[in-house]
Figure: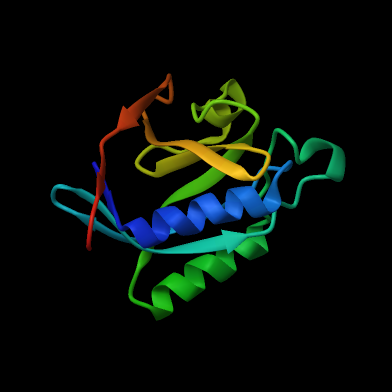
Length: 142
């Protein structure tokens, strides 16, 4: 389970719409707790993919990830997951997402169409990396 506030969900949706028709990406910063993850902040990152691939792939450069991790530590938080958008596609993980994900993290995906954010779901990868399972998304004040 992942707990997140409407404010962070709005930030993810807005980032997806702003970067449309390309995929947006960012970090989910928070804490691991006994009953799941708690998101305290989103941390937007620029999609480093080549222009032609940005439409259906995202890439976080290592130095950007390190900058986000450093920012999280300064706030006494940790990276609990990632978010990205799927322009003109459902908010479900692709085979590419499966091959490049890491277990234990949450992956929030928002579907974007033109100037609208549509469905938004959170996913968690099986420990053996064989598939994603939809993760319970608990929305409310954190």
